[in-house]
Image (cartoon, rainbow, N blue to C red; front, side):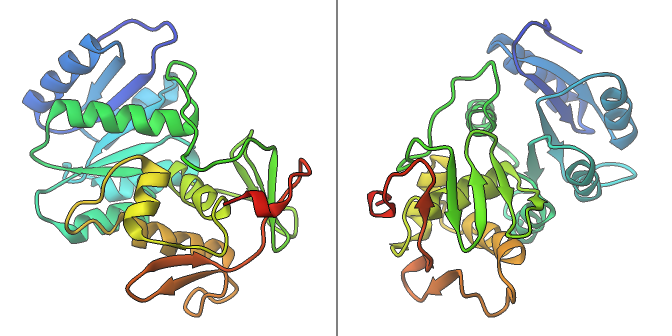
Length: 256
């Protein structure tokens, strides 16, 4: 473990390469983060039994239990944000990581400052105490957004179903849904959605938005294969088809 406790975010790095662990620990600590490093799944579980972490940087290829299995476990048992490290050029690994519930991914080799930017962006989205919260572009200040009987509580970052059941959302899914709800009945390109929800520009083969839309559809749609809430617009992007009501009393027309 490297770094002080205090109020600085605690980053848990899981990678079997000792050089990468040392490099990232030194760099992230120098940037004001608290860092713990482990080399495999058992190490991850042991740390989480005794300590709280704010974000996990998780390598896909690990000895024993791989990163995808560990990500599934984290998503099922915690609300920890996860940034997945994947092999360079492996689109399938990146897509699978997002499908498993990772909040973001980074392909190896990567720059330490890019990883730092991704970490800070995810922590801002989840509202970590040590990172200034930046509102999603286009968001309106309100407590609750209602649509089709669903309720998105922005203060708590929670989604309630029409049956009043709490629906688990990753930070990426929450931010994407908020972007849609702040722009109903408008065609949003993949680049626009990536900028609105994650504050970055899409790469040439970036399928982040497609994967996250698929995950949202499985949670919102009666039939995800024939969506009616979030439509695909060929050559354009995606469209939220329903009206949105702001419970604070502002008319939905103000959500533009």
